[in-house]
Length: 138
Image 1: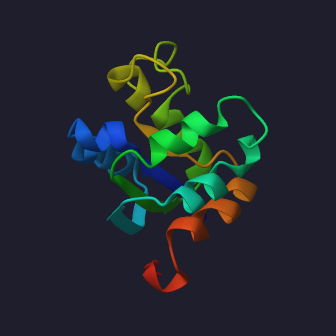
Image 2: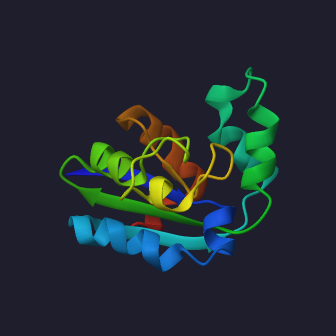
């Protein structure tokens, strides 16, 4: 079983898309093993996006993630990472396929509703930023 981190970003929460987003992963057959509504600190946001720290858009990513509440989740299932990435769609909502979360709800790359771990290595880096091991249901 593979695990992945999914974040419903501030635009997804403020637009009341949380239930819709969750249902897409449930309908795929993935198992929700951790979830919380939270406000992300600047330090956590910087750690989460540290791979982009030298890129010009880093501060914008951080500012956006801390701009409002998010829903952090861990999903588990066969091929969870690629399955969730496909459900989310291309990072740029204007180019994402219809039927994907971003294709249906996002018009651009800045406010693109969700974050999904892109690899096992990313998941291992990301999940402890948002969850303690005792918050994950085994």
